[in-house]
Length: 382
Image (cartoon, rainbow, N blue to C red; front, top):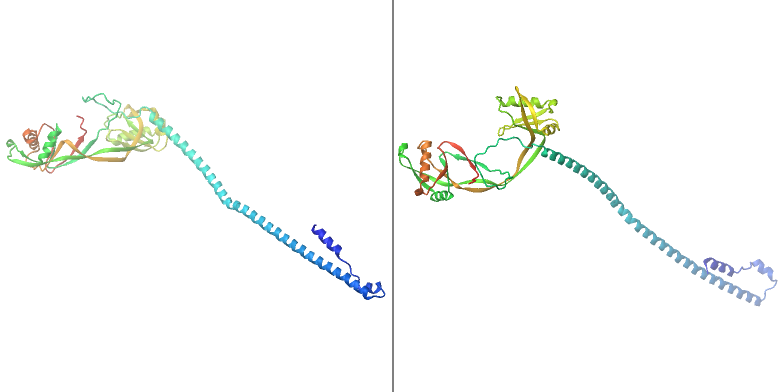
């Protein structure tokens, strides 16, 4: 039975009671039996009304329970909907950060591609300059009679050349055999007999010490190729001062018709006699290096100069190790009592005698008291 049917049923169970006027006019005379019948009838109607009231209360309570159930369901659905919306609100900032990160990544990729392109262009330019023949300045080479076995004919060997200060009152002795130097060092104190013909008699005491040097064990050099500098070689020997030569070269290479440009700096390298020119603008040096050689008028004559790239080097790492010269001995404590030549002869004679522990002397350097010199050590190739 639906709610509407229940309401309809209740309405149909209602009994309309006659008002007093109807009761008074319905019967002219009421007997006790009739009154008892009417009372019973009204009792039944009252019980029907009470039953209807009870059923209406129960229906009202059922409707209230249903309303509360529907309300709880609505609140449950509303909470569920809020929970579903909450992760979306939480993910919204993350989504925005993801979009920003993606945009930043795209920007970085563009910058990376740009840098890679610039690096490739520089690498190609470096290779073109490195391959541009000739790549080294001219140097005069001379054979001095030294012949070695044919090994590593394509190797470039850099031999160390070390300078060491030699104080006054000392001497360096180099023997042909390292065993001789070792015997001299073991004796330590030596009494050198002076030559009577030199005008001085007696003996002098000198001390033998090992000659220690610091030799390079590892060397790293960073080379940098300048894109605005050129190196000029094959320069003639002219009766000109350094400034006059640099002025003439700057005047020639500053003219655009000669392929040059404004010169920012010029330098004459004293060790090689070559000239370095630095230009203000980029590209000038590259065009000149492509020519390789160029005719330059200096004075009344024209000379062919060689144009090559200029590379500057910087030592980035140098490691040294102590080393003792196997054949060389340092003598100290030599008094100033003879002429330099006489003292040199006396030392050489003494240390050549096998009876004194000596042997064949290969080289001798002597510095008198009060003097000072630089001893040059080179690689022993024997």
